[in-house]
Length: 106
Image (cartoon, rainbow, N blue to C red):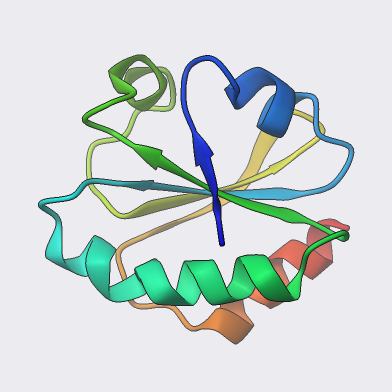
């Protein structure tokens, strides 16, 4: 299961992480977000220990959405060393594609 990320834990879980982190910016009302939700959760279970997967609800963490320039969701940001290294906008992704991007950052 993906980590629930918010303003209070984003720094410790993502920015200060010593492993790559995939962050899914989503919202409850977003159809495409719901489509990739299970893929994100499956990936989180498979890569535990080598990388992290978290989700930011843009309606509950507006400051994070603004900080990272979220204009369209789902937005998947790949972090390493506290910096955004890659991104994917939209739900046209596979679990293997996401896994490969995380492994490339390891």
